Amino acid sequence: MHPTTLETEGEATRPGTPRHPGLVLALLATAQLMLVLDVTVVNVALPRIGDDLGLDRGAVPWVMTAYTLVFGGLMLLGGRLADVVGPRRMILVGLTVFTAASLACALSGSAAELLVGRAAQGLGAAVLSPAALALLTRTSEGRGRMRALAVWGALSGAGTALGLVLGGLLTSALGWRWIFAINVPIGVLLLAVVPFLVPAVARATSRASLDVPGAVLVTAGTGALVYGLVNAGTEGWGAAGTVLALGGGLVAWALFVLVERATERPLLRIGLLREPPVAAGAFLMVVATGLMVGGFFLGSFMLQRAYGMSALEVGLAFVPVAVTVVIGSQVAGHLLVRVPAKWVASVGLALAAVGEGLVVLIDHPAGVVTGLAVASFGAGAAFVTAFTAALATAGQDDAGLRSAIVNTFHELGGAFGIAALSSVAGAALTAVSPQAGDFAGAFTVAAIVVAASAAVAVVLVPSVLGSSQGHGHGHGH
Image (cartoon, rainbow, N blue to C red; front, side, top):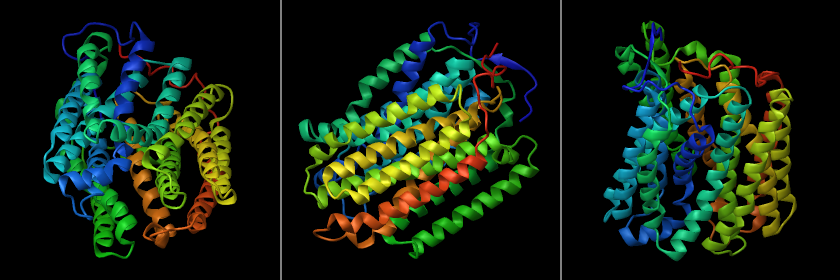
């Protein structure tokens, strides 16, 4: 990436700093929340979707996986497009695709139509998410940037829990189609106001710098890894589909590295992954997302199967879990201005480990909710630190790509968390009447892994990411 000059998107001549930064943050945060919600909003609705559309047992998980697969697979390409074409343009493209795809999902009359719609939602999300985060990063600095990243981190965690809440409420009250239909009026409203309120910021003029071979390889490789991890959770780590997908994904990524080193204008400067801030952000995102998505998956399963709670009751039980993610994120956002980031991340992960342990120690539904809430508080702190680490020193030419890297590891972490914890839980997931104790092993492993990650964070995460960093990168004048 060697941009020579910068120009503003379209014909706009406005400066890159928004006139109403709080409103811009609210708009982009709402868009991001839609994307995160749609990862888990289908969880509690899957049985009804399967019955209505005649999905066989093997196809039901793909209602969730088709979205995650495309979202994660195309994220790096979406982030690079935000840097090359301009973030505001890609926000509008992503919003249009996601909103139209949501309508298609709501109106789908067959399994094939729904799965195509979910894949199209993933395409829109992969374009929209890194562009929105890049725009926030490039139009803010100092405490304003820290505040924006705290909100973003909160949404990345809370949206996962809120997806279960919203899915349960909408499915019970209005029917499963409304979990998709609700995106349509929100998307249309955002499309109407974003062009007027969200500023155009500088972009590189070298449109021809898009690395097509690299884009194909990284998309195929990331998609294969997500598929392999998801398949491991359902079919096992030794299944042919799992081994082939994971092996193919690693080969594609190895080829991608070779192509990028030989390309004059690569999609991803490989050295970027070795830079401490980006490496730390990716590590924290994998651990925090794996913990939360995997924990929520097992926790909701445990509450329904072992404790006999209904889908609606489980959804409502996750309200305090979603709230603690937001609180943890906001607390961390304030602390990161004064406290070295490595300690915020480490203490957050240590708290998350304690929460996982509480699920094991307290044999009661309240124990599950309390434990997950404590874990979510710590994970929320880790989310904010991950975004802050990766984006604190982002420049004009790589803000979108850095955003995409962190978001890619968000999807990989979620898939890995479900796969790993499902493997440990094993028979508990297929038993007709599992006991709460049957899930103890999985939550124990989660507590040990996260506690070890807290120790790693002390070494890996940079000490200081204060508000002064990134001061030269906040505007696109």
